Length: 228
Image (cartoon, rainbow, N blue to C red; front, side):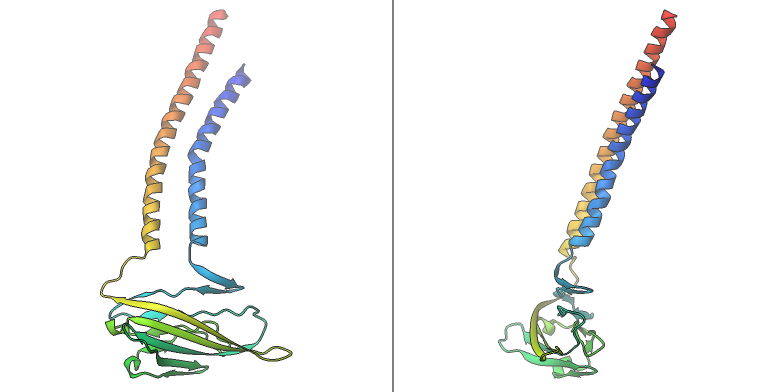
């Protein structure tokens, strides 16, 4: 009888423990999954990930124009050049604004004079062709085109590859919060509220369950004393 009572009490505590901590474990796993797999990545080759550029800049601040083109085989030697073109909002033709051929960087349009800086790969085997715009203005709104011309030095013959990427940039006076940040914050608040309510319910349930076990144990003890 004593063994049965201890086992029953043990099971009650274990069930309460599981009810309390399984939701917390699920929350931790959800957060880990969210941050690992939610970011937008178009392709991934080894250590190189082709992440899309941001598209909103704030007037008067700096902005990084992203352009990533990963090689399919990292062990193959290569050399690349990068050209950036800009088409202002409402116009039809692109302007050649920047050229990079390691280690030389050239600003080719007066509207961007002293405002563009190379933030890409620091060798001739370029995979990141990003440039940084200093002191962004509203006139910088428009379409930016990144053209990466790569030569792969293969055993049989060199292979020439051209990669083009476009970024639609909008310039605002005040930074807007990213949608992913807003969604993640809302989800976190909802989860916190739900978990608090869940913990209250579980605590009440466990209290009643343990209290009932205690009363039943005391009742059995009283019957045993009467029988003796």
